[in-house]
Length: 209
Ligand code: URA
Image (cartoon, rainbow, N blue to C red):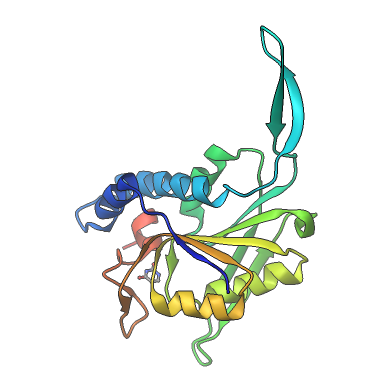
C-alpha cells in the first residue's frame, strides 16, 4: 500500500487556516497555494536520487551532489493543479512539466481525458502529479493510470487538502504511489466537496465565482 504522508508543520497549519478562510481573496489564496506547494515539494523530494560529484570551493575540492538533469517531471491536473506548479518549480526549476485534463461525463459520472501532453522520457523520471484537492479520487486515479501507460513508474501524488474517501480510492488503484498532503479532512459532502475543505480550489485560484 502506498504511504499517506501528512506534512505536519506549524507553517503548513498556519497557511492552511488562511487558505481555508472564505475571507481570503484571490491574490492571497494564490500566494498561499504556491507556498504550501513548496512545503509539500520539500517533503516529497526527500528521497529523489542525487549523483555524487565534486566541486571546487574557494579553498579546496569538496564532495558534492547534484540532481541529474531531465529526471524530474511535474504533472498538474487541469485546472486547479496549475496553481501548484510555480511552487514546485521554485524548488526544482529544472523539472519538465506535462499537463493532463479530464472532465466528468454527465451520464456515466466517470472522468474522461480531454488533454494530455507528457514530457518525453517520462518512463525514467521521478514524477510529481499535483492537484490541490483529493476529493473522490476518480480524476486522480485516472490521471495516474494515463501517466503509467506512458511508461512512468516512479510516481508521487501531491495535494493540499485530502479526505479519507479519495485517499482510499487512489491507494487501492495505485498501491505503488505515495500521497503527500498538507491536511486530511473529515469527509466528502453529497456534491463531492471536501468538508471542511476550502470550497472550489479552481474558482478560488482564478476568481471565476
Ligand atoms: N474540488 C475542489 O475544488 N474542492 C473540493 O472540495 C472538492 C473537489
